[in-house]
Image 1 (cartoon, helix red, strand yellow):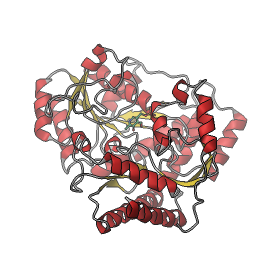
Image 2 (cartoon, protein in one colour; image 1 turned 135 degrees about the vertical axis):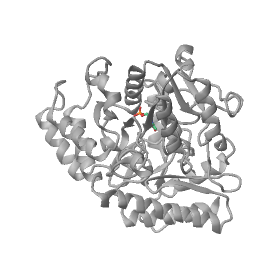
Image 3 (cartoon, helix red, strand yellow; image 1 turned 90 degrees about the vertical axis):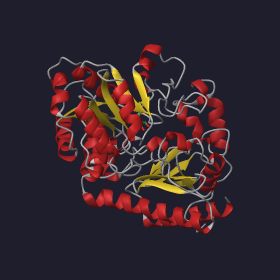
Image 4 (spheres, protein in one colour; image 1 turned 180 degrees about the horizontal axis):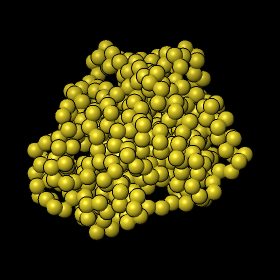
Length: 444
Ligand SMILES: Cc1ncc(COP(=O)(O)O)c(C=O)c1O
């Protein structure tokens, strides 16, 4: 290690806070996924501060951060321009529950950046905005079933929390997967409205679409499957989804909560040149504050615009969150900003590829520069769909992450998620990360 990242010390302060949290927070946490940020320890790390691409925990350790709040803090932590703009809003009032001018400017900018965005509605989280898009699709088509792909994640709410990560014993036949609720507490009626399909398999798709002819309101997908280790769509697959949906009168929804404004100003729909009927955004949109949006072509958003299809929310597009989004998108709309993110990520991907090759460790590095993952498949070939992930070497993937954490590199603790790169990452941060990567591979 070159000393630029302080070596982690004894993590007793995080341990003590987690013990204290057990008495007041259910399970000591505020989201089920946070327990997994424990890394090699039996408790999660408590972060105290961040600036740029670095964060510091309460134990006094510093990390280069590739979680960046699940991709949200895309400009970096405590970004000076964002801090200044938000401070001004704090002084003039954060929320009125009325229309505000910033939401209009923000919607205009999204229209400029995103091909499918004729009309936009704001929400507060990805889960909520997914619900909005599904409501719009159901309201427009009059059908209730939604086809989702096995392993794709669309939020924690009942609507689509189905077959997120089924184990092999539950998942059912490959070409006709069972709809497996992600949690107890999701009603059978809701699960029954979700049809599950394997990803990247045209024949299976057509068969399932045929079996549900006349029933489907929408097909929804993560165009790059961030929650399946950045599994990429095979060439032509998104075009096929577009063609099949158009031919059958089904709304195509891209869940761009992870890809939106990150893989380039126009998100995955621009990257792949496929325009969905509806798309969902959050994470990078807010630059670290809670805001989300669903946006769609005029035909499918019109019933909402007319007030036939309902959507609400006390906090939607508050001046505080809308300002955060406006400052963030103005920055991400500059091609050099997303280019820098992409190039930084590609340098890390290449470093991982070389280290794996040199050590003869089978490893697929998949995704794009702005979001990617290293997956230890048996022969190093990239994953095509969720069931491929059931066979990866999880122990090695955990060991990889633990070795990185020891060396001051913080990544998503769930190995089937991905690395997110911040615009603020410096050459020093990248040098330090590449050195940590080399060292981690040498002990795997
Ligand atoms: C692709 C995708 N869709 C939806 C969501 C849900 O977003 P939120 O956690 O803001 O509700 C997530 C969250 O990780 C996501 O990755």
